[in-house]
Image (tube, rainbow, N blue to C red; front, side, top):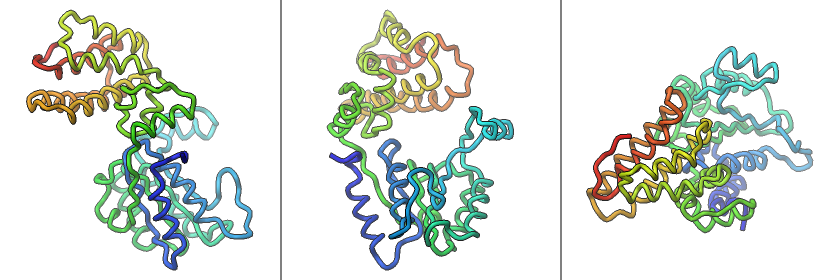
Length: 318
């Protein structure tokens, strides 16, 4: 079993193209988050820029440029320059694209090719996406773009049309279990089901020890919890001072379990409730990083949303 068993077909297509006379200059690596697209992009870029007889560095490569989230503001940039921790922006900005384009005016360092990885390309600001489009339309000789995308529908159609797409399938539950076992991590069927084929999600659930929470979430989706005991248990398992990372992991877990339940539900009425609950959890997850939620009440809010999807139940309020 390879590190990423879902990469067999993408590698076949990539290496076929690499061995052909005309290699496409733009590649869109498409698939859900957590299926190894960035790992693929880094390894594929190394294959692309390597030349026979030219020693290649083991660490950072001068001919591979990676664009991702940069510092949030001038204060964060100063902290980065001073070697301190800093807050990241939530998008890839036009000045990053402009800096990359200035690099393209020079020749590659070690060979004839250069690779530009943008991860995730979905989060390019509009102005940054438009600026990137110009480079995709008229790329310098020897320059190749690998755009990592979790939600390719968010990209400009003109960007998608100038790229060849490599699709990365979700991992099976069995593959996720084997990869967790290889890493010495606990395997829980409920958490694996909630990961929905994403090793990144499964890894986060395992590292956060969310397996007991998965059981409580599943129970809340099936009972009315009229005495609030299960919501209290959910709050205890989340913890009284849970940090942002743990809260987001819990919300991701809840979304995955609700989505799985909706797909297998035979009752149209309950499926509708599950879909509404999933939408509410997505909204809560988007708001949680910035909203001033009471940390003691947020777990009860999550639990109440889950209870609202239980069979023959009405929406309850904590």
